[in-house]
Image (cartoon, rainbow, N blue to C red):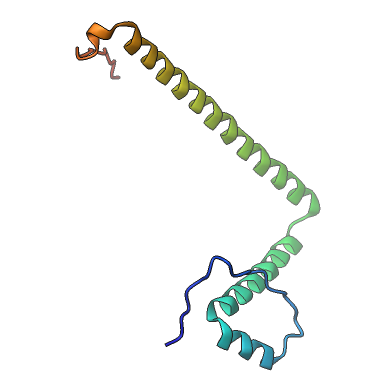
Amino acid sequence: MTDHSLDPQDNLELEVSPETSENEEASQSDENPFREFIHHQRIALEELGRAVESLLPKEFREHAGKAGRAFLDSFKVFVDATRETVENMTNQSDEEETSSPENKNASTKIKVEVE
């Protein structure tokens, strides 16, 4: 039985060349079917990217790239602000617990407004 598991030490960088002979492909298949799968997936993805790129004007691709970066930047700001808020709330909660040790076991009521 052949072991087809992926070894983390495997280098999955495969050289993509259209001149690959059938013998080379057969040896890749015998060696590791997962590598052959990755090889063909990479070729397919590269060709799909070239096909889509050829359909879109250069200006559109530039603006789409800028829009994508701006979208990611907005989420970075959101995540950073959320992290800072949570850290501040945690620090405030820790300070309240340490300032009044007699109220450690007392329950706290919080008023919540629901729309």
